[in-house]
Image (tube, rainbow, N blue to C red; front, side, top):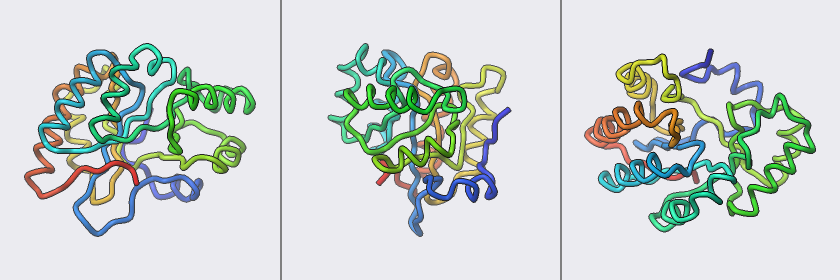
Length: 203
């Protein structure tokens, strides 16, 4: 069970988290979680380059170590990176000290003041601790690309239907999401580019 469009009441419960970017311009903020991945991330980078689009990649520390060349390509091509823990930890199921230490471990390889909790699951106590050093980035549109039971066309529909100026949109550059991502991402980039949108990194 997951929410495609983040409801107002959830944003109100965690007002210190960033759910969207306030703007009056046609700007969208694509984000990619769980990489870098040897196939999915280069595909994403090529697709973004084709549309002169920029994005923010929330990386897992261990994947950065395994695929450092791809990670450096993300940065070299003008995209932004964020911390997504070292081992994709679920904050709800993790002791606060262990969670903090894991993020700190990832930070040794990911130089960023942006953080996104895996699964979007984080305790208030963890938020309080992380707010000292990080801007915690959530989202208002979830593509559902990770859901093997969801048709790719439906994932595309979620993104095109619910995205608005300033939306933070979640995709995943991962093995699990790659098949859907290959279908959806180019169509999302084309659809919104034709409407005059630009794609930016999280400021």
